[in-house]
Length: 304
Image 1: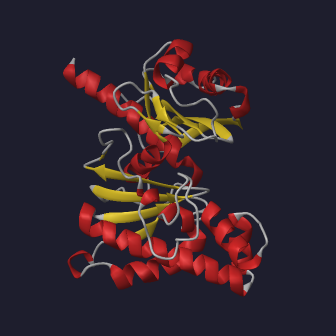
Image 2 (image 1 turned 90 degrees about the vertical axis):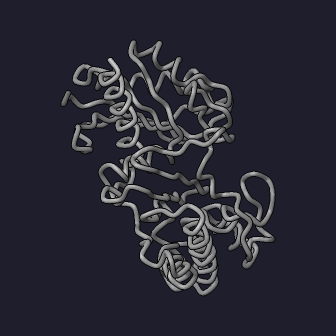
């Protein structure tokens, strides 16, 4: 079967749907603000409307990448932050299947991004990949032979909560201090800059100020990048990937210092494992969600 499928990306601020071909290319897309404050039913309705516009050309299942920890057995949300109020416990797969009239496969958005990058992005020539997404928070995913390792709770690859030096005064999104997300994320950049200057700005603004020559911002960004790179070097010896990919809106700012720290810290036995920027940008989750749907369709055809 060569027909395209639909992938959906549900985030705290934006929801998108795309028609994705068998070559991994986005052929058509729809996008709208996520009505997060209106509750899960409104979020699901918005996602279904976007997908419905594309489904005429796409027989078969739909794939979804969503914020939150996804139960791999049910496609429901085990845990989600306040970016999507009430999302915890939402049966996303069943609810969207009822709305769209076809099977729906669901995974975490970072897991979907990793699938997308390994299919049609920076990891397409690699069998085993660690992807870290650096945005407002910090997410991760592990891919083995083209499949995401979900783990026992659907949360494998959650690198955010690794304790790291230099983050002791910074609070992680989980509420504790000293974790990698607390320093190497957009929120981490904002918190560190506020501690050093008394001025509260966004992580993006910190990155922009660093690029413009602000010495304090530069120090904050370099410190965050170094923490990220050293942590990734340590993870390489545990997970043994073929490549490490860094994605997300804050990735560009952190990559120079992260690359230097990674090269300095990676064990000799893994010195040939590259640290690369991801390639698909905002399309990664959509492409990966579509890949998830295609894989389930191919499995059904094989088993049938």
